Amino acid sequence: MRHDTLQHLCVNYLEFPPLFAGQCVDSDELKTVAVQLGVPLSEDYREFVVRFAGGHAGSLPVAGLRRWEAAADLEWNVVALTEWFRSDRWPGTEQWVVFSNDGFGNPIGLDAEGRVWVSDHDSRECVCLEATFEDWLRRWALRIEPHRKGYLAQLPWAQRGE
Image (tube, rainbow, N blue to C red; front, side, top):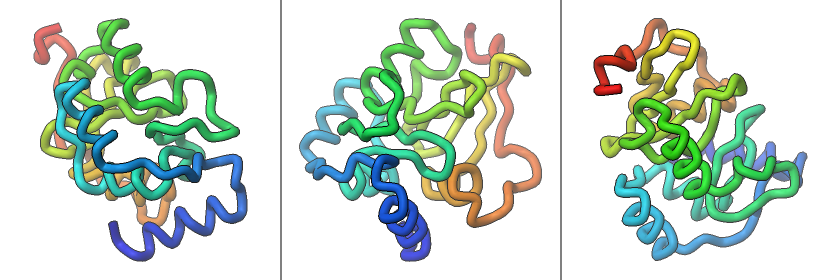
């Protein structure tokens, strides 16, 4: 990740320690997660989890592998969060690692190419928000940069085989 992205995260976590786990995660644990969920983890998401283990980025939770003080029961563990949305049959999540939600109950996840998607129950579509996890952090969570105009892709739920 870029230096200024990491700097924003570090400043946030130094100011508000209950917002991140702050424990080490090694890359072998992340390899196990990728195999278990059947989706490779992007380099930038892996870096976030190795450095911070999980935590809030701005107002949005980012699930990892360690619980942080301010985390809700389900939002801290990327495996449990992904499995919960998959068991609830949310369109798109069968192809993603779900690491967050949009604050309205919609899952946000990474696909095998590292793109960030949301499965939106209001519009009944899967929307590609960003090309990378770091872009999502910068635009949607930390708000370092403005949101892009338009989405990278929009797929109606029915088009995804649901």
